[in-house]
Length: 353
Ligand code: NAD
Image 1 (cartoon, rainbow, N blue to C red):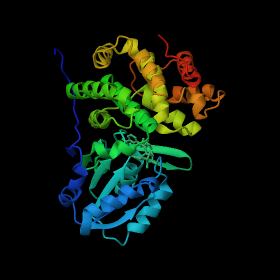
Image 2: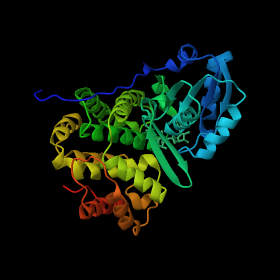
Image 3: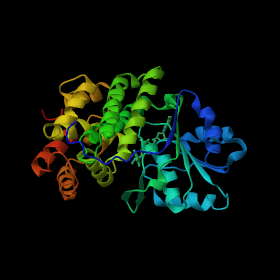
């Protein structure tokens, strides 16, 4: 432990974890406010209504229009709708899109948020917001948008379609992987990221089965750790590339992460020695990029970016855009190697050895 030298910023959230603990929504909400607006997606309106019922008289209304990537007009419409409700608390029940809407609203007017996540994306543990306008997604960090309380109830993930569960868990795993080589990581981030990676990789092979309640709980525990480290450190090549590819070619968030992860890790592996030691231990495998790629294939993730709708001609454009970004990454950005990385990910080939 010689040469320890770090800054650590941890998430101050209160975390309530356990099967069935959504039943504690009213008590947890009562610690934060007395007039709650509930947010959900149109697809999860049933959950929104359930939360409304659990809140009882503390609920002032439901907005069921959360959408992927938080379009600004959705935030505008929600803000206009709740203007007269005198709400002093937001309860966001859903995945990253619903929690993203809560963050968008909080940027306009600060109210505490109680998050009830239903995917493994991890947004509930971060101060990171994202807003999309005119086809461009802006992101930033603001401690005010981080939920104050999070209820993790693994039972809520039983309805997550297996394919969504798998790609969402791989998205969470990517947070742990990049935290392990972030240049602003701390010893506690390394502990959380390794344990998160271990839990997610243990659960992933069983997530495709609807009966595996234990796997969902283990993965949700991993997702909590993954979201915690995502909120504490800056991300590298993997996240920047997914952001660029998703925004430029309108690719779905979690499947893009699932496809890119083995390739981005292979790119950085030789320059990230201590991260690889922890990841090998977490995976119980020597060749971690290969292990992740084979696991993804066995779990039926989309084979490559081409299958997600990215045109092959877009590879050169993606490299050009990726080379414009400047951020800390274990291995410097090299155009030819990035072209090989994106080309393999496009075709669905295994990662470079
Ligand atoms: P999502 O919230 O967009 O959900 C995808 C779909 O699955 C939606 O239709 C949703 O209603 C449905 N769904 C969610 N949970 C379900 C469940 N348990 N059962 C049935 N259906 C369910 O997906 P996501 O991957 O959680 O979030 C992606 C978004 O979150 C992206 O916009 C991404 O940028 C953002 N994100 C932000 C952060 C951050 O820190 N700010 C972190 C991770 C992801």
